[in-house]
Image (cartoon, rainbow, N blue to C red; front, side, top):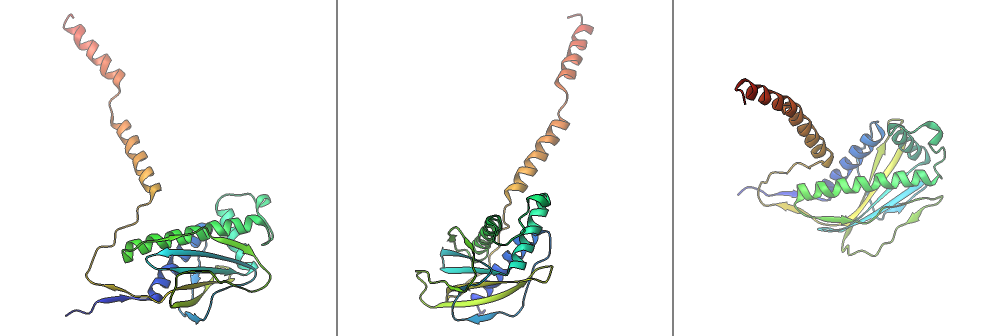
Length: 229
């Protein structure tokens, strides 16, 4: 009998790390990497200079915390703003700016959204998330959230920006395993932007190939005239 594949906490963490690198690399236009070594920790904490946390629930329960140094936060934020075409005069210069927290909070929202989609596709289960809470802090804050986690496991991963600045991701979730009973195809994620672009291209192509109605009418008139009608 073939041994069933088991997906553990580390596999789920790896999926989350891929979401972090994909979203932040795409948003900033620069390469974000994470360490191959993962730390086992006893609890999650928000640490200076900017921390963010988001809860998810459903197929399994968990808490995600990201901790940015001021340098890492500003690099990600400023690269994102420049990538969006914002002029330098409109880009904040301090990590204490509300704009920095708002942008990093939105990026965190995109990260967890991408993660929940991957979980749905790869694990055939569903989780939902709350709105990320991002704040600038000057001291360590332990997160104590009323969740239904029975045997929580906590992990910390180190991320490095292109400018060699460091930030951390911490994950606490139920001790759980997903056991693959049989093979299945992982459906590809559908990007709404691709659907809109493909539809627009198809419409434009159809218009280009469609004969000119005025030319058709003129040709019909000439034909009828030749017949004396």
